[in-house]
Structure formats: C-alpha cells, structure tokens
Image 1 (cartoon, rainbow, N blue to C red):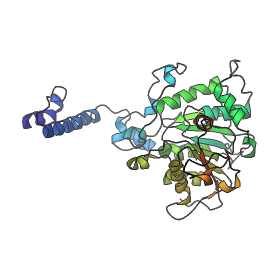
Image 2 (image 1 turned 90 degrees about the vertical axis):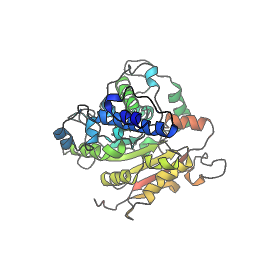
Image 3 (image 1 turned 45 degrees about the vertical axis):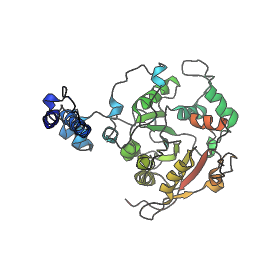
Length: 362
C-alpha cells in the first residue's frame, strides 16, 4: 500500500496508479494524486510573462499560469438558445476569479462614445436585460430592435404594466450604462445583445470580479475624460440587485458587497450619488445593508434614505419581517428576477443609500 501511495504522488504514475484497498490509504492516495495534478498544471507554460504580470498588477505567481476566464473563447454562438443557459453560481474567491479581467487598450473609449458622462453601474447584471431595457426606454424607441423587428416580449410588457417609469427623477438626461458580471458566459452573452438593441456607445458589459476590478475600471473611466466634463464621469447611480445570497455560513465571505467594495464606491462617488440595493431574500438584503452602515473604521460615507421612498406594499414576508424594507423600486424598471418574484406575490426587500459629504480618506 505504501508503495502504491508513493507511486501515486509521482507524475509519472499519475495517470495509471491503482488505489489501495484500505479506505484510509485510498483517501491519502487520492489527495496525493490531486496534489500531483496541481504540480503538473503549475509546471505548464505560463499564459503571461512575469514582466507582463508585474506591469498589470497581476495576482501573484499562481495567477500567472491561468488565462482570465472572461478571456476564454466563446464556444457557442451568442444567438443560440443553448448559449443562454448558464450555471447559476461560481466561487468568486477561487483563484481563476481573482484574476484581473483583460480590457481593450483604449477602454472605456472603445465601448462608450462619450466618456465625459456620468455612469449607471449595475453590479451583478446577469444577462443584461435590466440595463438594456433601462437604456432602451431612455435613449431610443425600444419597441424595435436595431434591425427593425418588433420586440414584443413578456418581460418588456410586464415591466410597463406593473411599474411606473420614474427614471427621470433619479438619473440625468445623458448617462452611460455599465454592467459587471462575474460569470464569463453570461457577460459575453450580455455584450452580444448590445448591438442587437442598437445601444452601442452607451451600454457596455464587462466580465470581471467586481471586488477585484472595480477600482481599476472606475479609475480608467475617470481618467478618460477630455476635460470638458471633469468630475462628472463617475458612478452617479449604482445598483446591486438580487445577488447570489450564499446561504451557508462558510460562504458568506463570497457575497459581492464587501467592505472593500463599499470603500471603492465611496472613493469615486460624489455627494448626492445613489446606491440601490434589493433582494427577495431578507438576510441577503440585510447583509448588504450592514456593509454600508457598519464601515470598519467608523466613518460612514452613505446615508440611508429608505424612509423617504413610498412603500410598495409587498415588503412583508409571511412572518411579518422586512416591513422597513418595503419601499417602491425608485426607478420603476424591474429586473427579470424582480418581475418573476412580484408576479408570484412574493416580497422584495429594498433600501437606498445616498453618498454624503464626508471626504474619502484613502
């Protein structure tokens, strides 16, 4: 048995080793075999050179051996029905999702016609239906696609029948729209929909881990201004809607709203700018809210304004909890998940934060 275990730890025998009979030895052999596979993977040619990784601020020695998942080629045509089916969960703390996303050299000018405009930032945008509907309503005739075909889908009709559009109360007349999504196939699918909706130049989707790339993205966007709108090209409205709740206690650290994310938003947002949070899981909403009201160093950069929004009437759960989060959707444009929840008569919990005048201390 010990000889078999020793052979299992050797790459030369990795593909042909036989498991020992005893259960404890099998577990050890399997573990050693897995470690050997990792060592083999780490010894393969790197996708980037050390100098390239250092220049980009890469994720250390281990990260050099991997290609960012959002840079992998699309295996299916974005228009195929099968391509629209995606896995629902990923681990944002895994090594591959801790890498920085590859961006075009001239980003954001490559994606936006006017980078002097403020930004609507949707973190965890999914397949992009919400941002496309929001931008389509405000910037073009959204009854038709770019090719002239009528869009008469169920989502569009329900959003107009169940919700009153109040975007003009919260958003400036001209604004760019940026969606961030961690699942590679989903972000690629969302970006493929932009041109089909005729919204190129004002809407863009980036596949990335927001807790890794947000500071870099917002820095690049701010630095892209030509001086005419200095101070305006910042995230003026940020939404985090129905994120993965990560129910297990051991997985709470995977949630998207972290102290680092709140700190980054505080750094780039101006006084009066808005962060909107919503979920159909009360614990998920409260988890996001706690990050904004319990900043680690005691400095609060956001003030909660949920009491200033009229109640929607669907904030109470069956146990009566969540009434304080029963505000209306301030924009009046729901996500596809929100439509599904509301039409079933289930509660949606919402809150809203406004950036105060406290200066950000880096």
